Length: 231
Image (cartoon, rainbow, N blue to C red):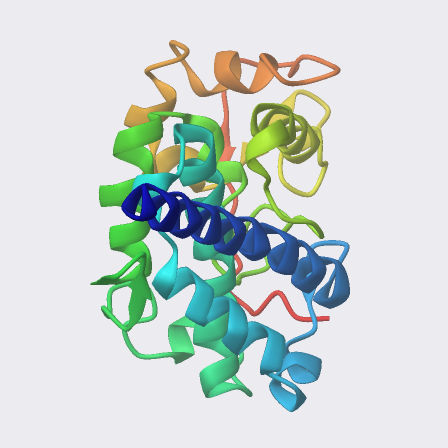
């Protein structure tokens, strides 16, 4: 009986620790993100909440989390660790000013050392197989989709991802329409195979989420702006 009680207490503690991560992440984004831009200078001055979140990311127990919680955790972890990578080297003008920003295995995620690219391409995407993730993961650059000023939460993850995707694909700065000419992000080039799992073309995929369908089936890519998404 004692073993069972200790086991149940341990499970409860893990569940609470995981829940605390989502609550603290929500506070972090609401405090430091405005209209998709990040207050890096402000965070640099007081890194206490950021560092606490980094510790929670390292200790998060994926085995005790359901699929929605795993996905929400990894989305938030990616966005937080991208900010961490900038803050550690701030002031910088671009994520590419940080050596191996995407490829260095400098982060611990749920007990495993990895890079941002590993987290995205080897952990999260193979599990979710959802092209909409490309609109919720934000790599600290101006041309990235605008970072949410709230955390993704297991309880309403699907509606959050869907809402953010619609917001991004209706954003005139992200999908640029001038007359019958349409320019789209390089994201649709880099991850074309992901989008083709859901639609036969870029335009067809975008139109799934558009309030007003695109006026042309032909698109071109605008130059990706890698300057920092700072306030």
